[in-house]
Amino acid sequence: MTVRAMPREAESGLGSLWDKPRLLLWVANMLYALAAILMLYAVLFLLVHLPIFPLREIKVNGELKHVTREQVQLIVRRELKGNFFTLDLDQARKGFEKLPWVRLVSVRRRWPDRLDVTLEEHVALARWGSTALVNTHGEMFHAASNAELPMFSGPAGMEKEVTERYEIFKRLLAPLKFEPRQIVLSPRRAWQLRLNSGLTVELGREQTDARLEKFVAVYERTVGRLDRPVQYVDLRYPNGFAVRFPELKSASEAVPHDSRKAA
Image (cartoon, rainbow, N blue to C red; front, side):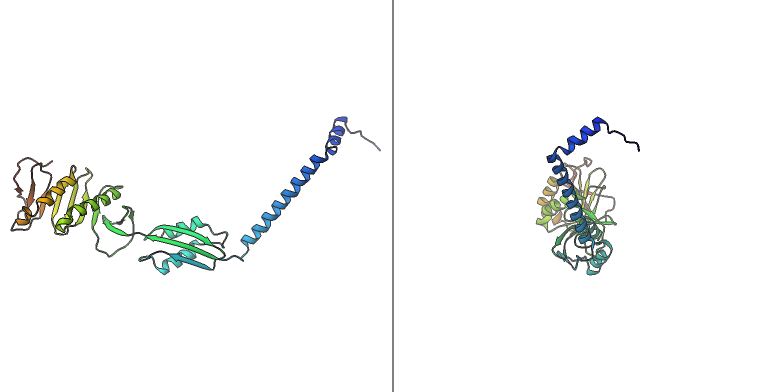
């Protein structure tokens, strides 16, 4: 039999470890704590993933005029996966946001088995071109509507500005009981209005509010006194405005006349 002697360095190191009961106690406590944490995690994992915490109720809140019960049920079947604990709330929110008329979604768990969903719908203010709608916040969205709405058009990304200008133009025209039915913002940022009376108003790029306010102030004693309907007014003249009658396709009359070219 061959007996090998342990190196003196190793013998002294092992001896020094066993000679430190506090260190051994600390290591033992750490191992016990780690084992307890792992066991607790395993128990929680099993409890959460076992089919014993199902979602039994989904409550949908909000003033809904366009979102239907069938649409909500479709989202619930397709997007809501998991039980009370494992359901991904962010994924659930994005699922409801896919509905055309939904603007904002809030999703919350309610112990022990309920999910509260609050939906805010878009409120359509106008049509944007022929492909989309604009809500009262100036946000474009895609949905179908049979409502009679004003028509907005302009460069991409200008929906909010056009919406804000619509409210201003509507307020300025209120004394005449006129409302904009169409607003066009050109790529050069020139504004044109078509009113509910059928009148087209050319505002141009500058001093649009002042021009429109001045026109409203003199309308009754100028255009309002004409014995023929007016089809078009151009407010871009510095000292007056030009009008066009339906039967005069190429001629214009000025009120008062101003021979200078419109800006």
